[in-house]
Length: 324
Image (tube, rainbow, N blue to C red; front, side, top):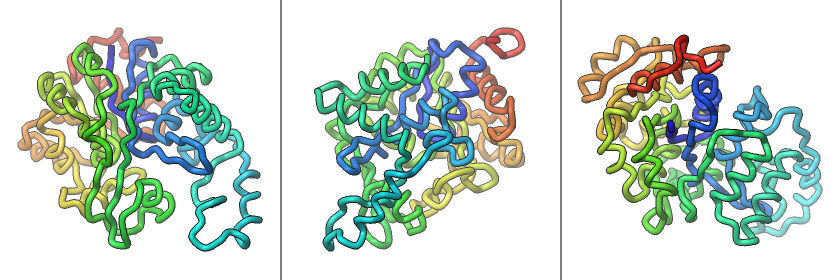
């Protein structure tokens, strides 16, 4: 079994390449849920849905989130209420776009949770509904919420990321509720052939998973078979605010900074060819460095990246590195 610690878009694209290399049933993805939010009374899990939509080829390829061929009539309809909404009310807010078809996923999740189903049960049902063979697990059954202390105030992650367009300085991050939450399945980290830390934001995508009791200790205990893929390329994030967030929080926004953050829990860091001159500096942080194309915008790159990550962890692949 291959275990992948995952955030949203970058992790989803990596997983899509991974299923070209090994059978989907051999993969368990542990997905960040600290970005989850409740809007219009609906339970929304952005990272889980992005992973499922991408693996089922239902994702909107241009945006990298939501469903392809989406319509937005429900969101457009909310505009009529803007002039009558009382001051201080959040009812009918349209700052977080939910497509008409995407709403069906949130209706289902909310209804099942209201019936008492566990988040892991619901995640598995949604994955099966979309025909996804990878085992998809939320990082915990409990509620953990990423809170961002910014230069304009404290807010939930989605308010910062979507509502503020992640365009304000970050002072600190808190994973509210993490002390009372349990990692979804400790046996996964022990029994996996290898663990891959996907190319996701180290602070707000991987950070909440690592903050759960026992996760870092389990990774450190098998460090040589843990491989991380840097989400930072040439000093910048390919998508999202990871580079600015790292800098704001006192980290170095480079592959060297990523190596420093992961050195205690992974033995190998995979970096992009653009950062090849920094390979020596990465290794001086105590991790082995592998250089390869990590920008998954062209056909074949994600699968090649997945094969490289597995081989770096000592996982034997079929000749040619492709299960097909």
